[in-house]
Length: 389
Ligand code: AMP
Image (tube, rainbow, N blue to C red; front, side, top):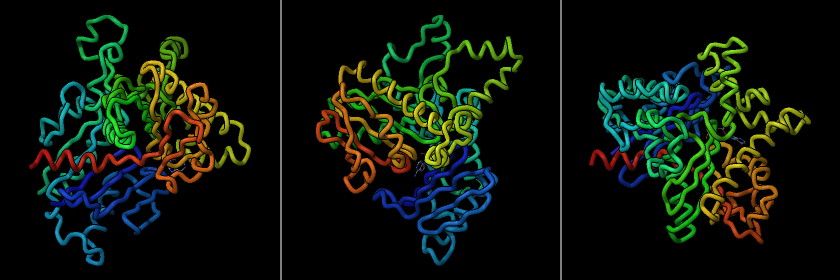
């Protein structure tokens, strides 16, 4: 059975077509820099650089690729039986993979305010897929589900209890990714009673403390703005800044929300949300870009310390997602001077982790450090396929 998995981000659309239950990848690719001047579409070894205005054009490029007789993938769109969607926020409603109908879409829409950067893009992906693959069963897999195990000590905020009762709590995000790579880490450790920190560093970024295979704490919270510095999001800030911007500087709440979601993070610090641009600029001696990289890595380091303290130790640190998998600079900066934790990386291995199966652990290190490519798409395909079965 052919299962198409779509991961619609704010500026990207990742996709994989699987033959299930084998989990064989038939097509893998992404459209990135959607909405920017120059976009890139890649499916297997086919690549095109052109403006991709919205997710719709990205899916149309994918469909054209799948139906192209030269590629021998599908003859008719009806061969795709399931489209599995990553949906960022499931609130308290969605704790399992769910078949999408009008009510589910409406609930995903209700949750826009909790994930203003992502749920709208996810819903766009769903609606576009319904248009283009009308025969397929559309299934949503939620990124908040893995973090439901976070204990109350970590998921409740110290604000009046009525708000907690109204659902204001830490939900956490990137759960599918943290779940996948922490399971891979436990496989490598050969046990499940483990203390692992997983760092999902993509356009959005979060750190998770995974204690004995379960999410114990995570850096994103009620919404996906908290925690690490991200491409366009501020990460942790002092809440009083929001009141100051509104009450003293005359910004509307909507403007502040837009600033903290879309105009902050690396965009604010270094002029680009793409870490490759920031690294290039830093390499040319741009001081702001260099500072931005150090701040980015510094925020990660604070969470490594926090979570190691909470779990009373650390067996493994895992880097994943676009930046975690590809930026030796960020990995080196984030793990610099952690020898008091017994953690160090091997700089030669860090420069070419794929050669060493992702193991970049230093010789003296007591803590394993791995680069493990995330595979949210496979995780979604398996969960969606299991639901239909
Ligand atoms: P993701 O959200 O996982 O797709 O990750 C997107 C982020 O990964 C963007 O900020 C990219 O700049 C970054 N990224 C992708 N490739 C590289 C690379 N080779 N070096 C540094 N950052 C990268």
